[in-house]
Every structure is written in structure tokens, then in C-alpha cells.
Length: 185
Image 1 (spheres, one colour):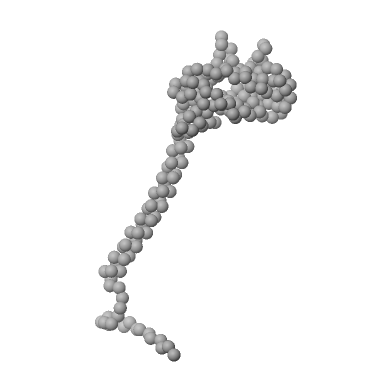
Image 2 (cartoon, one colour):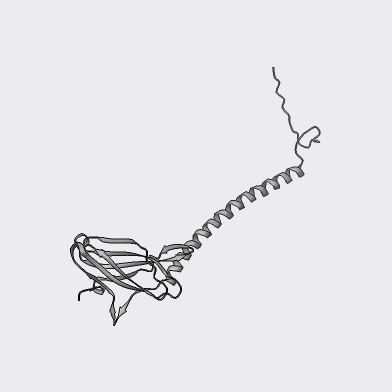
């Protein structure tokens, strides 16, 4: 049979025969543990903060780049805006001449949305480059049968930011039906 041994510590005892860690070693061990735990927490915190900084910087570059760098306008010839519609039924079209009035960035693509009475026609794949200070001519097909009479046009330019072609949704060129003339008129 096994015997249980109880050890009683008495107040004021001499402490002889007791085994334990000396207070100095216990303090050193606690400090070492606290430093190691602090290093782990700091390392995790640094990577967390750096990840948030990188994400914020990317969003800021995009928003600033688009708001400060994009200047897309409808070209005018003899004070006549070069944005018009024509055709009919399935053979409708929209013509436009766009100027890149930006001083430093070429436009690398366009996204055009044409709002009609019965729906919205979207074309997000216009891969045209409009160099700085120059213009581009676009002729897009549009189905009056499907989408109805044109109510508005929204053109979103894309520019190169950090090596990536980025749409600038905060800098669209928008025109209402009253600003779009009939090409045959």
C-alpha cells in the first residue's frame, strides 16, 4: 500500500529541507517569460498593423489617383459636343469623341453605361488608350428595341495606378438625354 506524505509549512520555520526555486531564479524566469510573450505579441501586432497600412495605402492611391489625375471630357467642334445617337431598333448606335485633358496619365480603358427607358446597357471592355492631351472616337452599337430610348450615358475611365489598370468610378463623365444630340440633326 502507498503512503501519503503531507508536508506542512510552518510559519517562521527555518525552511531547511524544503526544495523550491529561489526567489532570484523565479524572478528571472518570470521576466524571461514576460519578454518572450511581449515579443510574440509585438510581432503579431506589427504584421497586423503593416497589413492594414498596406491596404489603406492601396485604397488611398486609387482614390487620389483617380480624383486628381483623370480629366475626361466630350470633345467639341464649333461649340457642338461630339456625343450623339442614331439608328433605330436593333441597329442603334452612340457616337462620341472623348478628350483626355489630363496632364500626366493616359486613359487605358473605358466602361460605358447607357441608361435606357427599359434597362441599362453596360460595356466594361472598351480597351482603348487615349494618350495625354489627345482624343479618341468611339462608335458603340445600342439596341433601342431592348433598352428603349436613351436617358443618360455614364463613362468611367480607367488609368494605370501602381502597375494595375484601375477603373475610376469616382470620376465618371455623365450626360443626360438633353445633352445628347441626334447624329442626323
